[in-house]
Amino acid sequence: MIYKFAMLCLLVLLIYSTIVLADNNQVALASPQLPPIETFLLEPIELKNISVWVPADKTGPVINRSCQTKTNCSFSSVLPATVHHTKTEFCPAELARLLAEHTAYYHEQSLPLTIFNGWQWEYSYSLCQFESVTYDLPRRGGCWENSWEAILTQSTGSASFQWIEVSPSNKFVGKPDSGEQRSHIEVKTFNSMRTRDGYPKKRQLP
Amino acid sequence: MDIRKNDSYRSSLAFYLSLAIVTMAMAEGVSAVEAKTPAEVLIATYKSPRVIAPAQAKSAVADLESALADCKDSYLAFRIKYRIGVMCFKAGMTKESKVKFLQIANDPKCPELIRACSFNMMGQISRLGAENKEALEAFNEVADLLRQHMSVDKGYTPDSAIGKLWCSALLSRAEIYELQQDYNASITEYRRLLHVLSQSKNKDISSQYAPLANDRISQLYLREGDAEKYIQLAETFTGHYPEYCRTPIARLELECVKFLKSVSANLEFPNGSFNAPAHVVAYIKASNGGTSAQGIVDKLNRMCKEYQNTLGGILLQYHYAWLLDALGEKHKAAELFARVFSSDVVDAKDISREKATTETVQEYAKIQYAIMAGEKSDYNEALRVLSSLRAHPDGSHVAELAESVTKSIQTLKREVPKNENEER
Image (cartoon, rainbow over all chains, first blue to last red; front, side, top):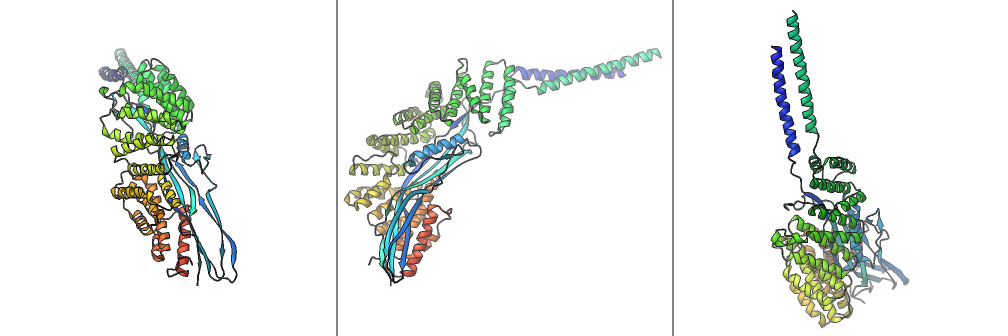
């Protein structure tokens, strides 16, 4: 009885092992379909430049109520250049640097390309355009007021990449996560600063 | 007794023997399931997240190298080698990655598509590493290898993956030349791209790249000093692509370049046309207006009406307001500034790219409007508009300007409550 039972077990398990091995042989013989080829693409650099007149600064009215005339009063106006450059965690540093290089071309007259951390354009001096004026204030209500205008050049850009999948059947384009990893830049510089028409205003207040 | 003992011995022996065989068979079966074929190792690397840590990538590279040693299939071997290059790149090992792609690309037995992808990877890595000469060569190989696939009769239109790869290679070459200020070479690459796009039956892909390439070519002509070709091309592409996001402002820039060239033929535009509208305003301010400006004023007026409530239209109105201000038409200018900052944008298809520009001009429009209201002694209106400005970071130009203008208006309101702002 035990002998028969043992033979039965042997038979069942041999059949099982044959099936498993046959399955594996099948896997080895017929290769599964390969996925498409993945390749990396930089998207075209997106850079939008505008150059517009803006109000640059306004001061006064500065009023002199004292009995003494004030002469050679001075006022300085500074227009700050700003660079705001970021990248997402997994965006390659080299891509962010490339974006800065493309943007710098449009500001090379006013701003040096100063790269920190291997990729980031930082500008810590803040000075883009400086204007200094002197004025006199008559006594008892002498008043002075000024307004400036300047051309602002603003560059707003981004750089991103995409992994696309290419197969001989040529059915695949892009991946849904494209564009998540990117670098952004915004640069503002000023030039052509001038006093607005009608200013400076010199008045005598009551 | 002996016989029974003998039977029992035999049956036990048979039982243990069968157990041993079954155990061995099962063990063999299990190990066969766990051992992956080279193809399976390759496929497994695709299951990793798209962004992976260097350690994960290195482990995948080790698996792939081991699979490569067992691989007998030539095509599969090239796929595995290519994948090793990709995983090295993902791990930040760009040198190793580039060496791998170079080996694949230079192997004459390599299938064409894998070769093209390898050249593409070499080009991208070189470009990122500022090795522009190598990048240009590699992208040229990509373009040459895939050129035969780009003919329409083969079905590989630029909307396909291969088409995108080909377009990307040419755009990369054009951008590299542009950065090197080799404008003629850059124009040639954009023209190569346009030639293929013109054969595409897919209008979506054409409208994605064609206006961009035309816009860039026109700018390159202007930068290298050929204003005539710029004018010719800008007129054509703004007419062909009215939906292109830069069309409204490109039309204004075109008119401004024409105007500036008419008043000063030697004027140059080394940065392209984007600063032409500001230069027109500067010219009018310096020359105190005059009849020569009437033509451009009329054109800008028409364009503002045409592009009302669009992102491009807001920028047009802003320039127009400054133009009127320069011509001394303060009242009309103030009305336009008010329209700029209170505009609701209907056409917001391209809002992410244009948002920063629109916000900037709307904020400055508010401040300029407040200054002009202050000039008319309408202090309450000026302060109302100033109080609606968004919060800006401390030290930013808008924040400091808003503070100085507000202080100025408050002082005027206190000291000159009546209209006493005329010079005495």
